[in-house]
Length: 173
Image (cartoon, rainbow, N blue to C red; front, side, top):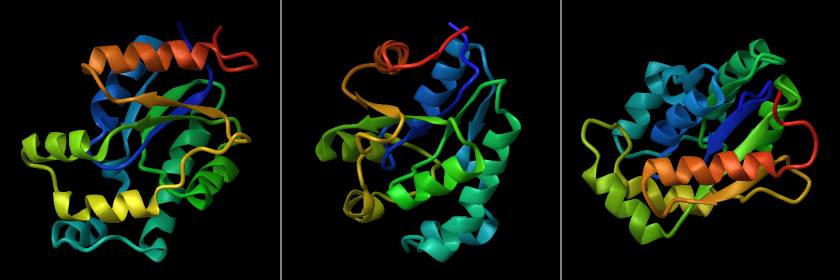
């Protein structure tokens, strides 16, 4: 399956956005971009110190991701991005109309356990509560699907591909 859409794999830290995003891009035959690579050094330093980002920190980061997505319009791509608030997703959509979201959603305890097992990532588990507090799930008028994070990355990716294929409108070519 190949898609001309840009898919944003979203969710709180620890849901597997990077792993599932890369697998999804491979399954769809499109390039993958990791949202963490779009953060300026000041954002990474702030999060590494245990401080959550505020909206002023996020706007330039979201604009950079939106620019990448706009450049992939009609070509397809997958990018991971927390996109926790509706306003963040609206900003991404303004830059790249037609993007579709895959919300990786799951139980807080499972996600925290996965975060504790990660090595070498700048996001501490202490910020997980702020991520859940900020999260605004996809609304019915937003193009996208929610996918449960229970299971292996391959199982989650399969559920995402299946759910994307069931969205109304042309999703593959």
